[in-house]
Length: 309
Image 1: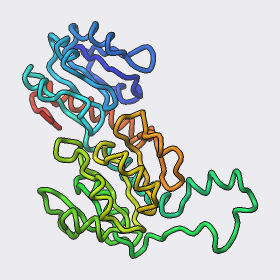
Image 2 (image 1 turned 90 degrees about the vertical axis):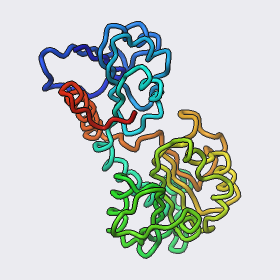
Image 3 (image 1 turned 90 degrees about the horizontal axis):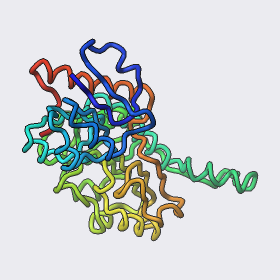
């Protein structure tokens, strides 16, 4: 069984594998698209990564390809419909990404509320002049309402963590009720929340789910947090909203056209910007690779898991 790994993932996850698995890693950080197209005809399985597109041309190159095991919960990098047409199974890793992303979400909520990134930048320039009892005031979390859009595994993990800070949790889900939390419609959630956190996958329905109209529903004191997918928010509309101080602030780990970010956001002090690090812990990376490899084992044993197409 020949497996092509598109990115140089932690080797710890590959330590205990069947002897008949032949695995090829890139010598550098990653294989280029051209290299994948050249190599893939000889391989049965592709272990891809969420940040690298797998398009029709690449899928067509996989003459023997049976499975694409994607490293990451998101799979919008893969043309899953075309893979299905070609009889290729696609799976993702929803379990291992859950806790690291929820942890980062809470870090962003705290960072935005207490102005951590802004004040770190300013103290390096303003030094002693920044100090003062009534200066640099932030917002506390206890008693505040956190509105979660998308109450799946990550959303529920965030809810549990936020409840420990004394926050009230409300959520918007299109389909599923989650016991123990208050479900509401999107308009009500946006109007009532002090913090809004996005945890919905990116699809045709969620693209620009939060646009100019939705941003105008938020309280002037509200914060918007996104650790889901960049295109769930109309990024240009959000930049204008933040520039005009229409809301208190935002914290973003994901962007519409990564790694490009709307230029205006770079110059605003009321937004935290991160380079898509929601799952970026070393233990998280190892666990995600292990889950992707377990998907391969399960597929070969005839009981595929985490299939998305």
